[in-house]
Image (cartoon, rainbow, N blue to C red; front, side, top):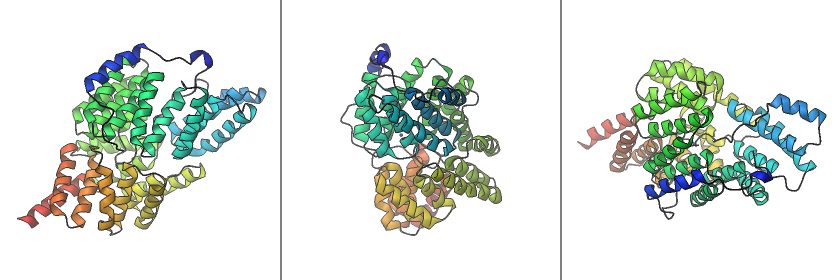
Length: 444
């Protein structure tokens, strides 16, 4: 939530402490432009949204309060943010229209100087994947209250998700000056990661971990460290961070998924399946459904896998009913496990809206899956041009290069994918190894 007037001043000690750490990183502001919460999903999709802390009051209590005090503009803004947080953490977008109505009520009651409603509406727009709208409302909130935690955080997210990576870095640095804290540091680390500086991202997160005090912050940062370690093939380290997160919050869904993903990468398939089954029972989003489906396929259970992939269509319908644009999620899932023509249509639509490394990867892969390797190649190269050490992107690039007849380049890309994260996907990693063996035989 945004800050009230008596809190509109920068924090000091933590920012100074981390400034020393940033100097040790040796990160210059002029690093090359490149392609959001740390670590993407298992299919190389965008990272899960990093939420602002949940409102203190429960939804039911807020609703009861507003029935007796319907002209409380701040209360309506708080309820809107509670609806957003409730939908975000449950994976059910049904609360988003209610949030929209609550923010509209708040702004009607208090059209001026209402940074809380504007920042909350920015978070709602981001949750619905309307990042242009998110940036607009975040900027409006910050014009009223330059120290709005939520406004600063969503502004960074919006720049990242619009592919404006230089601006994302600058926004993160500005937020660090105004309101340094866990949400800013994790976002800054992700910008570093997208630019290919995984060590720098780890350094920032490690410093952030030293400042985490509450169970929620400990779980959040430890999970981010675990996801980053997994993405770089450091599985033992990833599991240590996951364990730290789960000690702080035993039911933390992101930490549970980080652990399951790491077990899958280690070849502990039955264990990973059990963990993912529990996850999708609570949080049935496309990335998680695909991950479980692919584990079923790897275990020789194609019928169970198909059931998971079919559920993605149900989620897509629910997302659209809640005002969410699911095109990127649809493209990533359908390209491998659904309607390939629909995947290409969705990827093209998303590319028109925002040109990021994730949309470039999705469009390139969808083009390949529709037999258009030559057209796919420029997009796959855009996805990997920032230096982002993402094994999924490199696997996609390598398979596209192979289909385009560029065997030597394909071998380099596929080898690099497996060097970075040899267990990035139970099916994708196996496909990469088969392709390398095949090209080696053909070249001998």
